[in-house]
Image 1 (cartoon, rainbow, N blue to C red):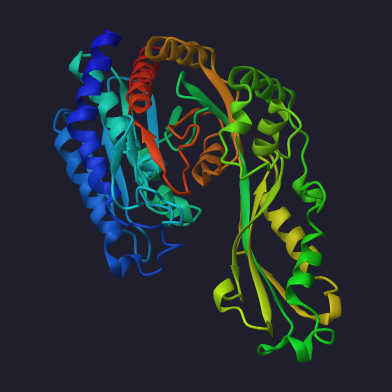
Image 2 (cartoon, rainbow, N blue to C red; image 1 turned 60 degrees about the vertical axis):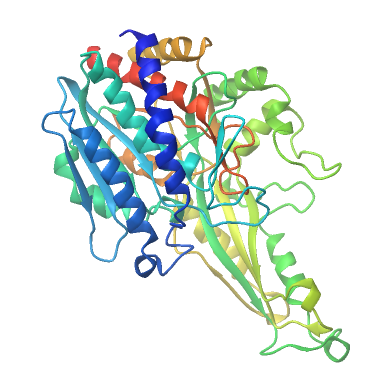
Length: 468
């Protein structure tokens, strides 16, 4: 493959078509069903799906026999299923999603208005994960342009990932005969430690998401009349959380959420820390003099990729401070996001957390923890020699630097599902979510230059996959 020619072709397509299309996509508030229960009536998801499908259909005319289906199973979000015939051995499966996180406060550009600044495309969903379809097809087109073989390729773009992918298993079952057994999976929904080389994600944490509610009254009561008699629901909630988290260190103390970290992952964290240095910590927007929990850069990587952690992501039962009167409030509801280690059992963790929170409630207060399910994490299989060599070659060609690897702290439910279904499959999990890209937070951006190089690197790997 003429890599320079491929890079130029990919860059031209990104500038002329992909960035403008992604800009239009950013304008669509197609929030995931967990954040927009009326998604079907609102129509935003269908608009995004049709936009992606229309662009893809035009590009697929270059491939004889290629097909695109927009599947809509009853009661589920839609899914784009693309099949591109190939002449190489095996089957390649490429994964991405197009549903989005909610707006969140704090944007300086705006979640639904695209802004290009300093080579970065700002707006919700461009990097997480709207670009995936475009990167996959432009990589295939770069090979096609040079007459370079690729294997049969299946591209799946789902629309419920940010809700935990509840609809995806039904679609995998629906398309199982057409998918076949992929020998390589490429997922473009992950991150990168910097924008200077190709990064491979080697593990993902699972998750348990639920709501803890503590109720002490049927209605609010004047705090002067009730405090000292009625216990604070917030204090009780704080007490209950101490059953699962060490209040001094943040360590999760539930045994079902603790695992031994494999030695190879410790070594990878050490190597990644040597590359990234203090940016592992300084990339985060700490307020004032706030200090990191981790004692070293290596420890920081392991803390965010292999240790269980708790975050409170939402609160109910409380007015805004400007509207808060002298009232002892009747209840406290906290939304808990618990990250499960990659090799942990999320269902066992969910049951253990529920038991710990609900047993022997202080003052016999009404306590409930509702978590519909646990999602397991994922630990990558050892790279096949051909793939390890291919990734290194691709990184050197696209970036001029060696490939690097580390775990990611987030979740991609599809990877655990595929790992169980296809235990012999190889995985390339990567993405554009690097320092300050702020997926899920304000000012999410896609680094356009990095996306172009990543696409070129993927084209190189697809070529090697067909030639192995």
